[in-house]
Image (cartoon, rainbow, N blue to C red; front, side):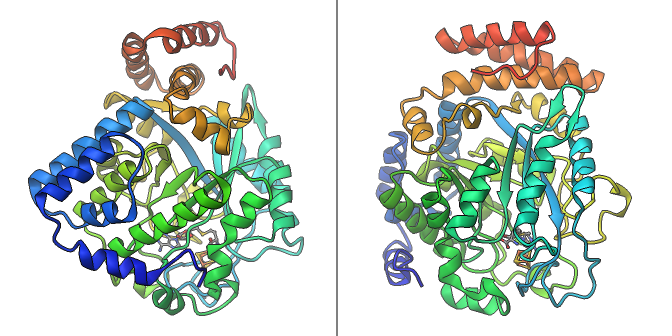
Length: 461
Ligand code: SAM
Ligand code: SF4
């Protein structure tokens, strides 16, 4: 186990903060107001609260911080599963090698282009490329070629402007190739930081090696990938332990590279074909605890994006927007070829989805709640990544880019792809949001919006 994950320290802190007194809880919530993040002990304190009033205060604080840093913005993306071939044995995943109940498939470059075109036609601009941990005969080059195919797909004025990737851990040289291929964020979840549990649920293939996986983001950053995404698969082990271990991982990245992760993902175990544990999670996380996890993370690492996937239901997703979620997927399929052949959603899927709505329906719903769906890819393309992004995010400067870019990319979506009803609702939200903006942010938003309304595309600052 790598030294930065210290189970003894976690056990001690959790033990000392089992029943935090109200004054301590108050002190942690007050500290959170400074938006400088929380330490392990603070996170342990908050993870143990259950009093309704204290929970209310936690949720309120998370909402305030989310509003201050992100405003009404919600970044939208779609996963693109290119292959479900896998050599590992993760007991919770339908893609695991021994699962015979799954149709295996890796998409050809032509098929990847077709899948991408479908997403582009829906209005998507950001993709998360996902694959099992085994590639067709081209080996790792398959991933590089696939990224190129996604970027090459064009339909009218539309194209994918940012490809993030969630693929197996790599060596530094391979990470360099991934960076050269133009990925935005490299995302990898440790699944569980609890050593014993990790070995119980990973019984075959390379993924058995805990340390190799836990140090993958170090290698990615050494290779020059500035934006990395971390996550835990909640349900495998005690969520309080996982939260503290996640904090240790974040602390390590901050200490070694001067900057922490760009995003945190919070997947909960969902039923998966041929997996018993996925339907009966040993440490199932209740809905209230799940909301608590999101709120605690928002307070603990205020400037890190929190991603909520379509594993969760529409209702749960709605509830967590106010608690700190800043990025959501929409209209997702988790089987390779699932966008082209949407009738056979369950053949070859990785897990069951909780939210089956189309992109347009999600966008309408989000807009009705007063949020601005953002398709912005400005930071990545202007080199505002890693340390540079965090340096700007902390004093609030990034908001002067994100707000205007969200407005302009949302307007572009409304004009090019939205249904009539969604467009009406969306234009009202844009007006409200612009009216609530001040200074340079407002000036930029108005300027970009005018250009988009005149038919210009890809306007950002
Ligand atoms: N194969 C690579 C890996 O394992 O990192 C990348 C892709 S894997 C398909 C992406 C993520 O899906 C995993 O990291 C895991 O957290 C998640 N996952 C697997 N099975 C799941 C399930 N039954 N419910 C929810 N998420 C699941
Ligand atoms: Fe393979 Fe990843 Fe699924 Fe594990 S989680 S079986 S490595 S695709």
